[in-house]
Length: 240
Image (cartoon, rainbow, N blue to C red; front, side, top):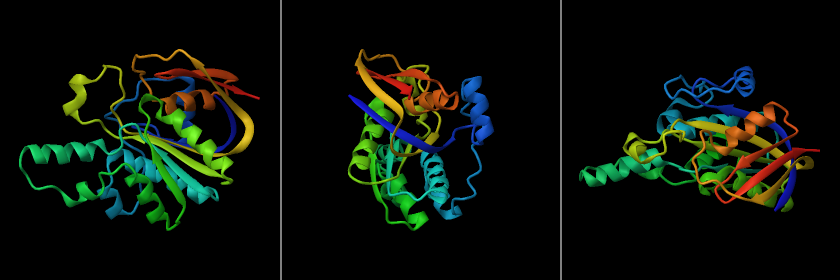
């Protein structure tokens, strides 16, 4: 598989990292992200909406709103490996304990909750979709972005995100697996500035960073070429 695109803008948020300068410093001197570090300023989110959103969705919607303010977006894609796992765990726990379900948790437990809230808050009825593909959610999302661009949408916003993974699951997770919330937003259009080509040879081990943050690290360092590991294949990136 081969594809190419241009990236016009980006925004990201994670514990202790929200400002551009913080991300640029992190990309040059990467360090482990502290789950206990404070999240960035979410003042752009209406208070009642922020209270309803899960940790990852807050960051994803905030990053999406920032991109919508700066660009004329034609379509939106949200990608998330775990989706609304926080809410779904609370629902399952309530059912197991024979407790009443939270209407808010029930209504916001679907995978497209974050992108739906984005378009509602922004008051923009944009073409939107959600996608999940395991460890390769970010890369498969970019394949979907290419489909949208080839379908005629000029400028596509993609936001890759996840929230806190509930402590219930931690004993079953690899020790290096990220358990903290993050969001990475990219504005893409047709072009040849960044090229991607797949090669066989996936890696079964869990990475210490999701693909989107690995990509952002290389992107901010203006790397001429790099490879993102996947579960089934390798994703080789290069600049033209």
